[in-house]
Image (cartoon, rainbow, N blue to C red; front, top):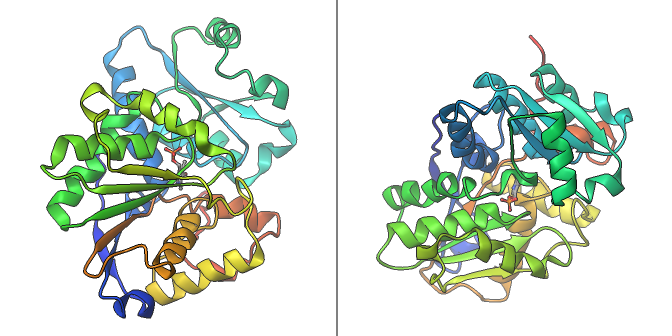
Amino acid sequence: MTCSSITQEIFHPLWLAKNIQVFVKRDDDIHPIISGNKWRKLKFNLKHIQKTPKLKGALSFGGSYSNHIHAFAFACFQENIPCVGIIRGEADNINNYTLAWAKHWGMKLHFVDRKTYRRRQHADFIAELENLYPNYFIIPEGGSNKLAIPGVAEVITELNQQVGFDTILTPVGSGGTLAGLITGDSLASNKQHKILGVAVLKGADYLRHEIQKLLPEHAKSHNNWQLLTGYHCGGYAKFSDEDSEKIIEFNKLTGVDFEPIYSGKMILTFLKLLKQGYFKTGERIVLLHTGGLQGLGGMIERGILNKSDWPAFKPLTSD
Ligand SMILES: *Cc1c(COP(=O)(O)O)cnc(C)c1O
């Protein structure tokens, strides 16, 4: 399971005028099927399972349109690891874009209602699952555990060989990716880069603590990172028509497609910061494209977005 991605410069009149350089770390291109940051987070989790003879499979959690569930199902399929997805919601969703593929790759879908799903970190619920699926390695929602961190840290190792930069931006859901970047930056460089995370969900201030908990000892002293919690556009998977139009326009101008749930919110935030004069003349900025284009499948299916606006979304076909 190898993963690495290229870094490319993108151009836009807004920052050319300010003498700022912008690069995209193309983790969306790590793999034709799997979303970038999920691949990185799963890498050492799956290695751990393969190295531990008593483990027979893997189990994780997600909503019915989850990028993590989609990536996890495919990665386990590829590595021949039996897997279970604990899915929030009703079995009516079983044929939606995301879950139809997860099932196709052999994931056992175990649906639970919203109330049960909220107990996903409670010891008694975990014990129930351990009973039902003995010797399955349990990976939290979003794949964000300690084993996810070294996989994401490799983003920084790669970047340091690809471009010199001052600042990196990433979208943030559960915080594992941001924690991985902070860790990579503490390991790899003599100078700390500025690391900005853009929370895509409402009320994300609690994540600062979760991120701290995920950091290994040597990374806890990194003091040049920030979680921005005021740029969620209304909450998880919420965005206005104006927001999605701005993202579509940005995609057309730069030739890279960002989607509106994660990476697109980072773009909207980046544009706002740029307008506010947040970045310095000569600054070199990396935008981490975490992938997530599969999520467009469900939104196109439900008529929330038009397929023709998102040329980089290529629906999978079974042949
Ligand atoms: C899951 C996901 C994120 C958020 O990553 P976390 O590690 O959960 O913060 C960002 N972008 C995409 C495309 C994702 O699928």
